[in-house]
Length: 69
Image 1 (cartoon, rainbow, N blue to C red):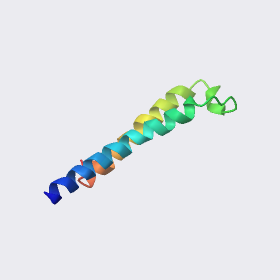
Image 2: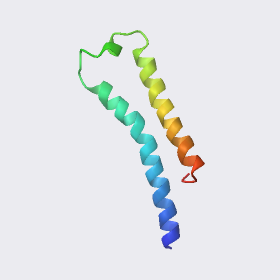
Image 3: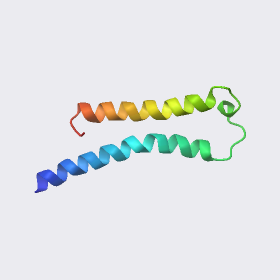
């Protein structure tokens, strides 16, 4: 029973970390800052989306590699 709970805790923790990456980037962009250079840049929004997906993908790859997912 303890081993099963440990495995599920690892999976839940891994998914929480994967979902944390886009949440962090999204909350920073959700603040009403006017002096962020990437807000006035043409590729700022696509770069933020790519960062969210990229960081989540890296976390997924790492957790898959160590056997947590």
